[in-house]
Length: 429
Image (cartoon, rainbow, N blue to C red; front, side, top):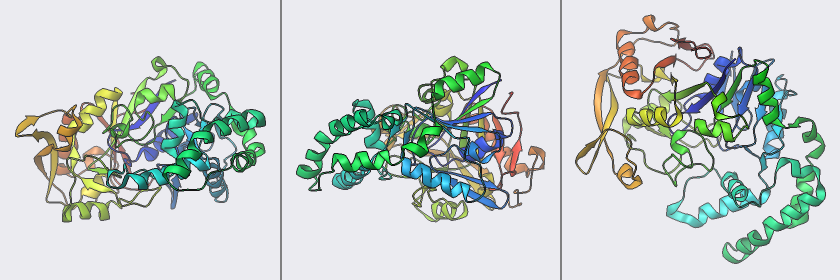
């Protein structure tokens, strides 16, 4: 049975949770392999809406084992709050497994994230202030705290002391903040140990054994390709590997076991935070998309920047990730437009560029070259086959597919769980 990676192919918020949930009924394990609680998935089940931040969306499906992989940074307080909120609504959360090698977000990571971002002023990256970046920085600097460290108080104390030695100098002497006491951090983290213990596992071994046994494993990426720390619009990116390659490093499953890569794109484009965005609309059209698509962050509530579909970005994502299938979401949001522009290339200093420029400066100054397609007025939220779509909606999907570097296998036509058109089987190709 296949190992399938689901990734965002734009700047995030494309609807990855819904795509994961679409497969969940035929899935045994759903794995979050990167990021933390700095992004969210909104999943609608019946008349219930669930906003998930740290948990894999597969937790909403009976029988699926949700896994938080080693590539995730975990704010344990947020984890338990989210579990409690789901349990209060009748969701079975006892199946969750957490990697012993996942890193922990501490209070000093959150503090540093907020004060550093304020200190940057106009050069702010646009972080969520939840400590994600500082936790990943500690991981790379080899002064991080891992989940397994919480079960050995002596090791935990030594690691916290080592991490705070330099950080307290920074907080006091540069940012004019109080020093953080080692005891304060250690006591806080130890308070989670007993509840956390049953969830912790060697998840890399667990997932490989599951694949050996013929189980289906879905890897659910946080953020998106254009926010990847290596392949995104650096430095306006996240701090983890949010491309398909990150599924291997963030889970302990080898790359040659990942059989399918599903890229999620919106029928238009959105972005949260700072950084280049060639098709951004700072006019009534942008506000119309934001309002109609309810484009506000699941985690932060921040208004998302909005723009038209960008085909060069889709092609770039298809190439970087090895996308075998695209899922295009929120096609229904475009209903009512007379014409729908699609970015087919860029103009950089008067020269046409058909692919995403390697130079961030060029990308920042790229002017979109648009091709316009006729819109439609018919309500498509109840449509369940491609042939039922209005002719102009079909033509739009087919045109975008031809530009994007891989086939479009499913189309989201509304917020409900079942509001999707399937053109090709995402599980078996």
